[in-house]
Image 1 (cartoon, rainbow, N blue to C red):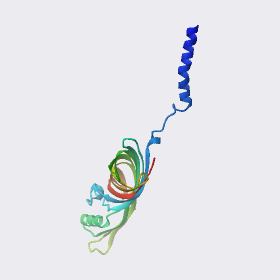
Image 2 (cartoon, rainbow, N blue to C red):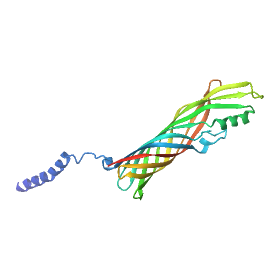
Image 3 (cartoon, rainbow, N blue to C red):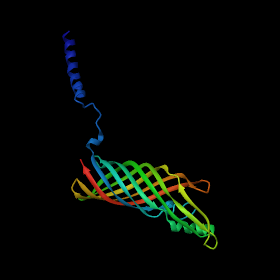
Image 4 (cartoon, rainbow, N blue to C red):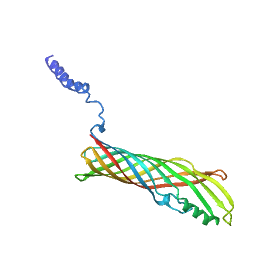
Length: 244
């Protein structure tokens, strides 16, 4: 009986710390982001269409001109430099009216004028990256992200003239359907410390891409199914705010 009593006492002694351990909350799930350094950044960017998006090829070109936009980022940096980042942008990218008018003039053999037209893509992505110190005042962060892009397009007006270039043969408004698509981003950010561990001046560069099918609609013609490629190099500048 004494042996049983001793065993019972030992078991209680062993179990008590475990119960206490659970009661004190150490068994609860710990948010891994609690110990991460937080960075919030925002700024403006110059948007340069590249690839098919900036091409003036009538068959597959996007006829997009350089534009501008805004970005907003939220980042958590863990020990060792690994980062988790949430990235959002909104841009205004006008249509290259002169180039698309010239392309249609050459293709139709009739003077063509184009006015209006603007892409307004909204991008939202998440991803991982890595931060490293390049100097006492400079931190560089690189990242790869994936998410969605929603492109809203402001329509353009097209006017086609007769062989004399004076009488109007055709006029219509063309507009792409607004669509969601999968998107990706590869980026780098350069943070120049203004107030140590609090505020940095930020220079960023990234490449974003998306591809989706969209219908080109007008008042007089049947919808035309097209493939849209949105490829943009963004060069931005702004401020980053750091918290521990």
